[in-house]
Amino acid sequence: MNRKRAPRCLVVIVAFVLTFSFALQAPARAAETVTVFAAASLTNALTEIGKLFEEKKMGGFIASFLSSSTLAKQIENGAPANVFISADEKWMDYLAKEKLIDSSTRFNLLGNRLVLIAPADSKVGEVNISKSFDLAGLLAGGKLAMGDPDHVPAGIYGKEALEKLGVWQSIQGNVARESDVRAALTLVELGEAPLGIVYATDAAVTKKVKVVGTFPEQSHPPIIYPAALVAGNETQVAKSFLEFLKTPQARAVFEKYGFSVR
Image 1 (tube, helix red, strand yellow):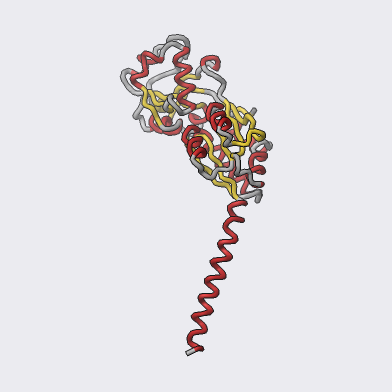
Image 2 (cartoon, one colour):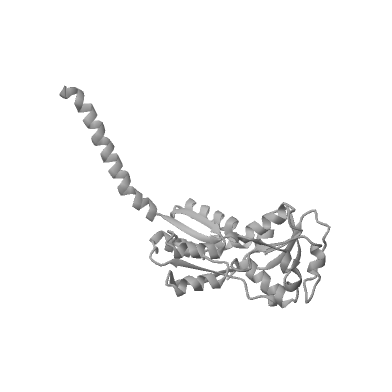
């Protein structure tokens, strides 16, 4: 009887030891991985930089790419991010006010430009984006795809530019308010909107759209991407990743995708 029971007891003991061992290792593995919450427009560039970070065996890399406003709210609600990179200063300021970022680590990482795009096969040619340009006529009753100007940075910049140029009132009823800038890009790619407002870097990652105009820089506030560690989650690997963003290797990737590095 005892001989028959012995193997079963051994299996139970081994299973317990393994489970306990994995439980001890889980926090260690988490500490060796950086979780980055970043604006949707950074998807391609930051994914590539994350791979470089891992290849150099500096730590694991996990990223969530959504609108800066959505990510800021998730961090406010306790999401386990280590690093936050916003597409504007507003949402970084929001978290700073709530003491949810380590302000001593904050710096301006990147810059960008705002452009008007159309499907690649569109008959719309080059557009001179200037005071009172006929955007409503170009839309011809169609939708203007852009991030929701109530909270998405690209949409906020876009609305501010159109207001300054004196054309917002004429097209506001035609705006397709998307959850983030990449959703606006997709709408134009699919031909579901004849025009869209996105960042220059978004337009550069697809052959399905073309840039028909670039917004004057003075038509909206400077497009700045601040980065910082999330308060309470400043692990060593997170600090290493934030520093890695300043290296020549990371700079080369950002510039390849059209960002201006601060």
